[in-house]
Length: 114
Ligand code: HEC
Image (tube, rainbow, N blue to C red):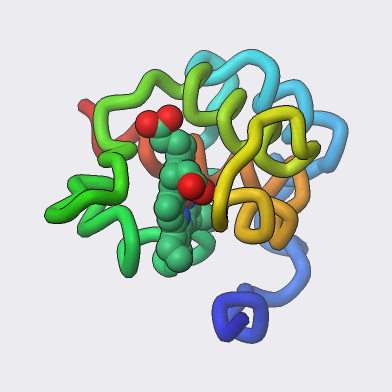
């Protein structure tokens, strides 16, 4: 998808994006979420709006994801990704993101819930 091409270059300017640390962030959100994750998450989460509405406020039949706790959002994405949670489209969408990217998306939506 086009968001992959739009991804910012390697994280040389973001020392917090050490993969191990980001994985810890995924497990401990929102406590460990960093501002850098949220900015990156905003880019990664842009395609979500086409189905889930602006900032996750769905205008239609697709469920809103605004207001989900970071834990629930993270769990849902990881379960869609692994196939543990059946879905029509979200399995394929979630597989397009690795775990640090999911953590960044979760961090972004956490800033919208405040
Ligand atoms: C092509 C449309 C589409 C896009 C794009 C999309 N979703 Fe979804 N999403 C769905 C549908 C449809 C469902 C209902 C489950 C299913 O059938 O796949 C869903 C369900 C979900 C759920 C579960 C909501 C609940 O109430 O439990 C989460 C969380 C979610 N999506 C997150 C995201 C995130 C994050 C993104 C962006 C990375 C995204 N979705 C992009 C269509 C989409």
